[in-house]
Length: 239
Image (cartoon, rainbow, N blue to C red; front, side, top):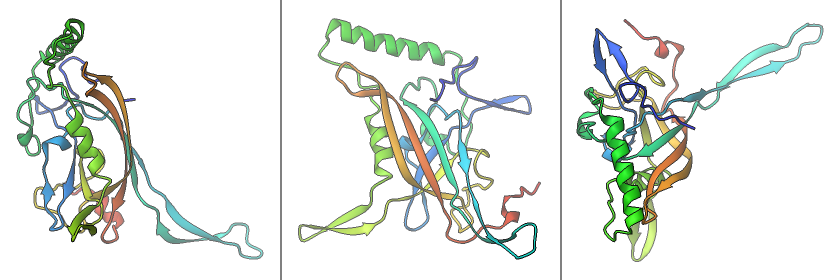
């Protein structure tokens, strides 16, 4: 389970040249034209604490009579898979506009945990007093529905019948240098790291008094989508 990253000054940070910088992970769709579709629902306001990466290589063993060990021949490589959990919440007081998170760093105020505590306390007061007008500031339904949509294809209606238009979307996972070594500022290429979502698990851990989801642990399983083969040299970062 992911851990709330409220240590000292808020979200996990990297320090560079004496200046604080915070980067946010995100999961975005790619359009059929190869455009990255930035969507505010795709940002993880609490960065995942762990990413698990797995990939295998298929080596065929050929037994040779009189030889102590089999001869190994590489045939292909297995799919690259990423799994991670994200603690999804809209407790984001003071975190700045989401539209600027993709290409810029955001300073997180030290008051961040206190403002979250105030919101949670207000939600509890609403429940105790039985107020009819409940705050929707912490409702994460939109974010959860965005993640659900990543598993579904797109259909168009033709004379009342649904016709398949496209498969579930190809995705980009923004996670700094944790998973990928390439940037997406110049657009998508066949060498860009792209993914498809193969499994999604949503565990709602907190709800508002009106039973709207307020907090959830979302588990993602992503498999790499590779239009062409990668070379070993593609993973060497040139300084």
